[in-house]
Length: 206
Image 1 (cartoon, rainbow, N blue to C red):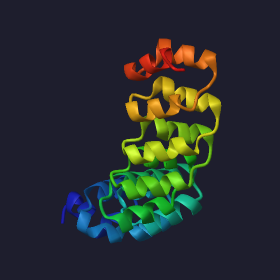
Image 2: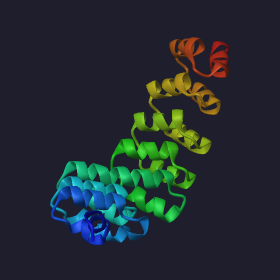
Image 3: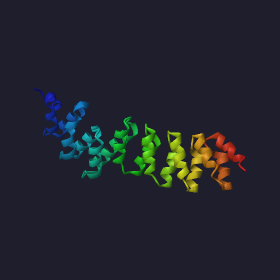
Image 4: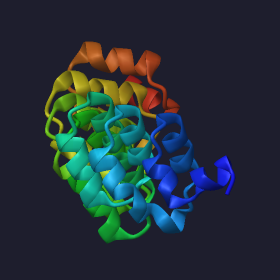
């Protein structure tokens, strides 16, 4: 058995050389991901655990790693994989499992904005409460219902103004405009709003 064969074989994951272990992780078939469980939990090299975290698709295990690994880069890799699953997974239960492991506000906001499944975006939105995060979803969310849900929760005047000014989505920009009473803000929207209909409406706002 040659070197490459040994690396491709599951025993490559326990090779004494970290580079060989990394190569074994890269070449491991998707059907054998369970072999990475002891690697991500116990390999002495953080870069090897990090590579394993990037390939795993087990939300519960990734959540464990994201919360408890001793190395911050490994925790970040696990959280990034969880975010990718929450964003792209079409199985709702699996996506919810991935979402449950996320703690970072920016990652939750990204899921609320761009999750493939609207239900997952809504679950992420429910965990957001800061004006900036809500404003980001209102401006950039891919699902209209979630943009409006984020906007309804916004009370910060500056964030409402940003939505009216910067959103490319007409429905949200106009809805934000309806809640702005400041003459200076209306003037700015009339001059600078990204959505032209919102700009025109602001110029003739009563």
